[in-house]
Image (tube, rainbow, N blue to C red):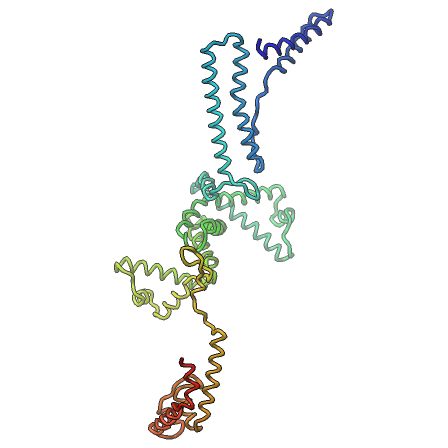
Amino acid sequence: MSPVATKAANNAAEVKPAVLKIAGDDSQSRSQTSRGELTAARTARPRTCGLKKTVGSQDLNAAADELLAAADAVPSEQSRSKSKTKTGRRSSTTKSTTTVEKKTASTKATTILESRTRSIASIKIGPKGVYTEDSIRVYLQEIGRIRLLRPDEEIELARKIADLLHLEEIATQFESDHGKLPDTKEWAVLVGMPVIRFRRRLMLGRRAKEKMVQSNLRLVVSIAKKYMNRGLSFQDLIQEGSLGLIRAAEKFDHEKGYKFSTYATWWIRQAITRAIADQSRTIRLPVHLYETISRIKKTTKVLSQEFGRKPTEEEIAESMEMTIEKLRFIAKSAQLPISLETPIGKEEDSRLGDFIEADIENPEQDVAKNLLREDLEGVLATLSPRERDVLRLRYGLDDGRMKTLEEIGQIFDVTRERIRQIEAKALRKLRHPNRNGVLKEYIK
């Protein structure tokens, strides 16, 4: 006898004495018997292993283990069911069929487990919960589900938005007069409407503005794509363009007769270009200068296509009607700063700052220059005052500017020939070994 049959027989034996003790009412006996059999059946029935429906950020490993346990439990449940229905009648054919079913169930459970593991691996756990890896793709999918507006819907929404702006102007005027924003009741009194009707009117205006913006978010994405790789990320471009779209929804006048998308395109571009000019550079450039840089790039591209080569500075300046000096200044201003910590080489063990010569003098050079000036002053002191002054003016020892013989002659009120003679005589004195020995050390 199988273990299952033995367990059922024992349960029945336990129930039978209780039934025999009850004398009198047959219906009560049947009731007690059915209850005992039901209890025995529930005790003998195997429990199935379940899986939680939701998986938290801290229970991913536990969910995988639980799924593995469920996969292992599937074949055992099927084998128990087979043993109950076909006890004592198993043949070689039945055993082979059960083996195939076990393998099929095991393979199916393994496939489910692998799929679940891949799904868990694709999820990233952040500080605020579970989020998908490609947030931009999810955002594009969400806005792609929003239906575009018909022309009549745009007009209706624009009217409600205009009414909302009128209500907000009333609140702004109240704030300027009283120093605070009005509450809902005060606002309704200012408008001259019951509070319930006013709230509904305000809600309709806000919903209209929200719907107008959401239905045109795809326009923001299409425009933001044209401004990529200009110093701002794609997410920032979409964010700034969305702010321009909100501004367009507030300024749109449906009575002009053109579509909202045509009007909103200008505001979206204006918001994106202004953000690039303000945020894309470490050193901010004025907006008008950034616009000039953009026009220079566009002109260069047009001339390159026209000439089949890169245009010269003269051609670009002539096309833009500006001087070459101004063009060079703007081009220099457009250069992006480079960090001195930028890695150099394949191994990236060197930095850009290691290869740039310092603008300031090191202490050794400063000391050597001071010593040279002291020794030079000492040598010049051996000359006559006129010879010393002529050499100072001739070689610019004081101000760094070398003067001509004519200029020095005018200073001393003599001819240039006389100045040349004084210079030659002073140099002959300096070439004497007693004087030039000190200065030769600096030449070496």
